[in-house]
Image 1 (tube, helix red, strand yellow):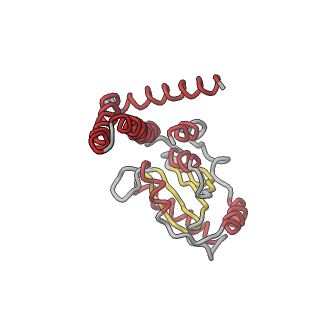
Image 2 (cartoon, helix red, strand yellow):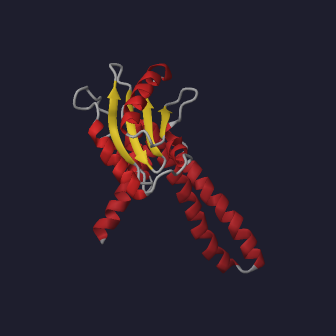
Image 3 (cartoon, one colour):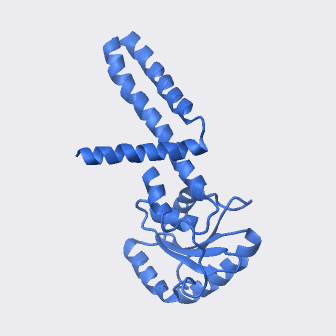
Length: 224
């Protein structure tokens, strides 16, 4: 029991240090949210009921608000640390809880280390690229044709991950995926993945860059 408590505090301290590297004013932000929430709840409840009840209600709510703010900052900091690294989008999707997303990394890689991943989920097949638009558009088109030959009846979507115009930022990736229509059921997703496994990926024949995929899944999951 005490070991779990210690591990929790160690993890919290690590997350705090990591987040403060990105958000220097994090203590002021979290402290300000705590104090503001405390006063907003404490004064009205104290005046309408009594101050003992006000304290009992206000402190947990203030802690909850401060914790929520910190968790949001920590998640954004984790994303910012891996943003732009090869394999970041695949690692982030693999960290999602629920959603039944099945990721095949690096189904296409070019000499510039631009990557296309294949994601299978309820929408169908999502081809997800990392790299500048002018380089990944031909890669996505090629991979789309190759995938369509194997599953012509399945919807195929293309999504460019990045910070250029028209691309989806890493921090908004989950929201973008959840906006896609739900076309398949659970069993159909498994069958689709089995059929597409025959396509394989490019990792066996092309040098996949060493990115955050081995470690960032755990890192992002801790923030969630």
